Length: 145
Ligand SMILES: CC(C)(COP(=O)(O)OP(=O)(O)OC[C@H]1O[C@@H](n2cnc3c(N)ncnc32)[C@H](O)[C@@H]1OP(=O)(O)O)[C@@H](O)C(=O)NCCC(=O)NCCS
Image (cartoon, rainbow, N blue to C red; front, side):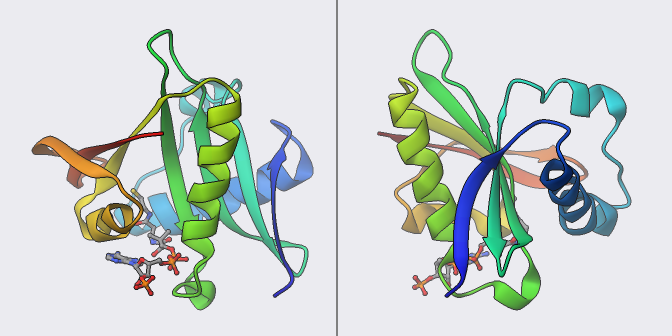
């Protein structure tokens, strides 16, 4: 498959392709927008793009490890025609390798309730109670590296 995964620079052309995908897959279905304040707060995060035939087809943002060694994954999405082919797993595994190199010992995330099973297959475990974020149910999940 003509697949590759790479980090893209904040405000670069592929960053804006990722942003369009995030809006289309993660915010518009919920009737929400990504605000300029939210986007400015992502400047220091790693913007990981999944490319298919040189088109951005998946996104994942990495929050660098904190002092306790916990990093976070967020804004995970793969374009619908390419789902179910292992690309989501490839994105998460690539992120874990990058974060390990950056000193992470644990990865945490807020999972939409509908995708808890996806992260469980990858070794993440639910921690705590269900909560509402961006209007829909979520669960905290984490995995030691
Ligand atoms: C979640 C998502 C990123 C998965 O991407 P994907 O490329 O389809 O995932 P993969 O093909 O790598 O799936 C790996 C495994 O997880 C399973 N899986 C995928 N989505 C799942 C889900 N929602 N629930 C349970 N299992 C799931 C697959 O069946 C596959 O299992 P297998 O190895 O036994 O075949 C994708 O469905 C998506 O973009 N969803 C919409 C956006 C979203 O909800 N993002 C998460 C925000 S927290």
